[in-house]
Image (cartoon, rainbow, N blue to C red):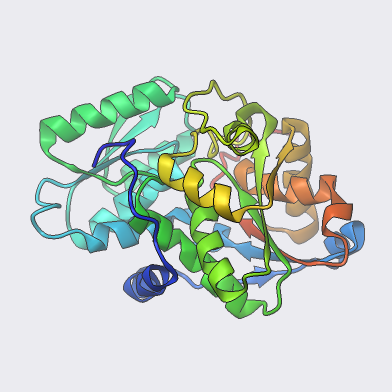
Length: 320
């Protein structure tokens, strides 16, 4: 599959099948609440804590679903992907579960904790320049040279379906949610969640949250034209990629909007969760938290689900 190939949009049935397929390989993660958070924004806030997920992030869901839907012929030469960290670790672990080789292209400025994690799960890590173009170029080189099957981080319906299992879980854990908000990088997370959530509750409000320094999705949806290249500048290292044809199509149809926040607001929100709730979240996870803190009136008196996507932080280089 070519990186820019438009693929079929997954359905609720695909997400339900993914939930059964990956059940033995993932955690059903908890939902946590905070009275302090609730009082501050005058809403009921429910944090879906994928920071407690295997590999420390939600990405294991989509990667596992994608790897285990491939035929034996497709995985004979292993799999390849590109990632700033969490998706790479997820593909590495999923490949290990299936007993196949994984190659992961990572930017040379990715957090060392994430590079070490990918290697620790048994993948062959190749470092590249911190640009999407170089990531994709080296990924294609490996795919051509080794015959490895590409597990794209988000332009893959099986990856999107796997991420959508978060939506099924969250709605099952917290009935009658008014709103769900999550961070936007390549868009796979909120694409999958939006399909699942809309199928269960067509009236639910769905928002994305994005750093101002990597706001391609915001600009794409505003102009109805997908931004294909950007030079990101944000502390949220997991949100550096642009939307794919698949995720752009899904988010354009399902999201009410995307809220942008500054790095200062991201860091403040990250620290708020660390200090008030005593849980470790990474900067990318703090983006939707920052969005709700920044615009409390938008969510006032709502039951709001916030997807905390991961907790992989280099504790020797905390942003504060």
